[in-house]
Length: 102
Image (tube, rainbow, N blue to C red; front, side):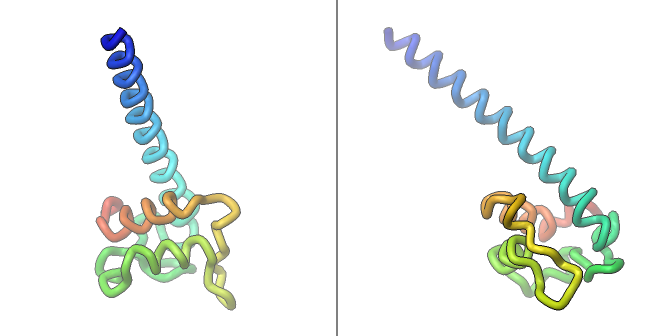
């Protein structure tokens, strides 16, 4: 009985890991396609401001996530809250600050 519980737990962990990897790939695609369409494919700027680690150095992840979720009034930056969860916006903020696209 205990081994069945252990196997079930292991299966749950493995499927969660797979889900996390899929989420990461999906969010990387969002960054490259959606963010990149305005901020440039390497996040060095375009219609939108640069989103390189250097440009984001003085901004914390929570602030970046809030901008992603709520947009910036009076600019072309739309709110992504209808499409992204807060945890996903935080993932994107960490991804951008980590310079993964450079």
